[in-house]
Length: 535
Image 1 (tube, helix red, strand yellow):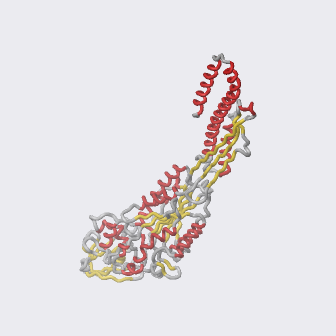
Image 2 (cartoon, rainbow, N blue to C red):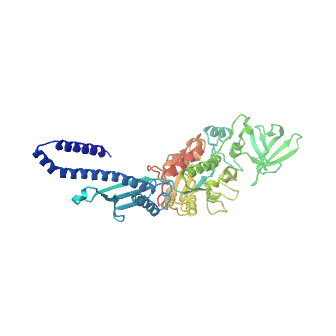
Image 3 (cartoon, helix red, strand yellow):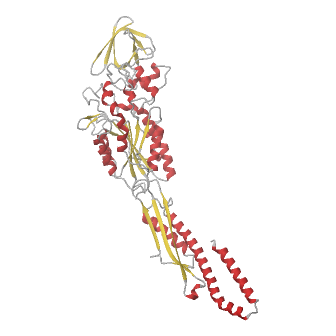
């Protein structure tokens, strides 16, 4: 483009020179001018042909750019490499047909390559390499009928693939932990043993729940029976063994208690000194967290990680819907939870739904984990006839079970060939029996199960709800058997997870007082941002 003004100036100067020569009357000048005029004119003609070739090359290069971009645009990046190649080729051949001065051999001088790089975080590269001839107007007299021109254009783009997400939520007893430091402190201060976990046990041992006045809480045996007259009824016992209803009205004295395998019975003298009995259970930490403001009116409600876990799943739905629309892809979601293998089950995993397009999901699709936790018989015993030694977080069995549930992943090119991702929410501490009890970070056996899943091309992304040693203060067994290994938890989770774009593991940590919902959405975004077409 910059040569045209220079060529015009050259032509003008040659014209001026010829005019000056024409005004000369000297025979020698005329002779010399006649001899030099012919090669000068040929030189001028070649300059014009060269300038035309340069202009044509720029125009064909623009066509090649358009052809390369076609193979990476929103329409064709979701198609196969062959379809994209055909589209790019068609764009080039159809547009260059209008340039009569350009000739080329489409079989040998047009090469279109479409490369879909394998692995994570890469996309599609389309290269259009071309060559041909620009027809000359003047140089053909000397046998130079054309000038060779060529070029190459490269376009690169990424596109979020269609993906299926298997959301696996930890519902083991360790997830019955308040989500805030204030909540943890409140639970510890309100239980006689200072336990931070909201353990759900029919017989909580000596870990009694106290109200604001230091009275122990006793719940009616039908407290959790919906529709029963005594549903939601509880009582209070003071240090002098006097019995009160929940309103603070005294009901009796001389309270004693005895237990069967079914419930605890309070025996007392009513206000008429008649002997009475009251079947029920001493309130546990789970009851406290769900009824805290009833016994501490000036306090605030206490949320548990298990309830915020389900809330995060609910709030993920509209976020995923928005991302699917933004990326013009289909995301599907299926809900699972896990803890331990119940006597009637074959694995610790519970499937709560089928794989469903997020576009049709609502908050009602998310399981109510908090209201469906096991009501254990007592410590170490889920039921009066079952003793699992508190081994209620079977990580290896969960991973093995999920590996059988998740199908082989596709390329992500279409909704019928989605990539597969397991989103795991966990506090990272396992308690299981894999050739002996393991109650610490993911073991080598667990990590081998992670590798088996990843080797199938399925991604693992983990939301780590940090397990803090502060919650174990006062629990001598946990201080000796769990606390020393907590520094190993995050590195083990990082070993289990898949790699992100920069090589870092797809693990996101959420601590007490931080939002699990925000953290899950961030992990979701990290996962789809580091996923590109691989087929």
